[in-house]
Image (cartoon, rainbow, N blue to C red; front, side, top):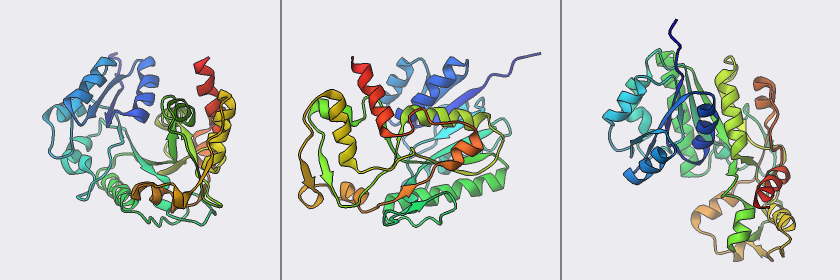
Length: 292
């Protein structure tokens, strides 16, 4: 009997998708994915994966060819004003029965501002920024695609992503860390290894829910995270800077305009697992340990 080869295709084989790709490749999966430029595709190829260029402006013949053998698809490219570019240009390629699972990486930003209150997957989305409204529109487009085609589509709403190379540890080491303070402000986070861990579990789990919040257990003030990282490194904590004096860009200010605590019970109950790094403390400690 011929062995079925599992094949992950990632639209946007970037930081998060590469963490998943590494797990699956170790299990013998074929992995392919896209970058927006030839240079980016070259970096994907250097990792040993099949690389394609897809900039979202037109369909790609090489992407269509690769999708003909794909069994699982992760979509992490952002939607534009005209909608999700993957659906715009490659919906027909994704409709075949050989594709058994599609994971769409969205954002907890779709919940908008909750004045620091808790929310979960049953909370009605109320995005306040244009980028989060586009994400919600894309989620709905993917669910419509699933209804139309019968494909299994699951949406993963990610918190702020951190991990090796992208953390308060790294920011302290390169001199860019800041303790920006806004009274009462908290953020959820998620370690990139937990994203991969959870997506891997979702691929294997029987269908249960269409939406999962992918967050840590402890939403926390950003200045607390920086202070903890500084303690791990044994360096001074940067001075507090009031948000009104921080000189943030419009995008930076938009993140601080939303204050919420996001529950993650569903990923534990439905997928039957625990987080590798349940709070920023464990995650930062692991990153610091790698420096030693």
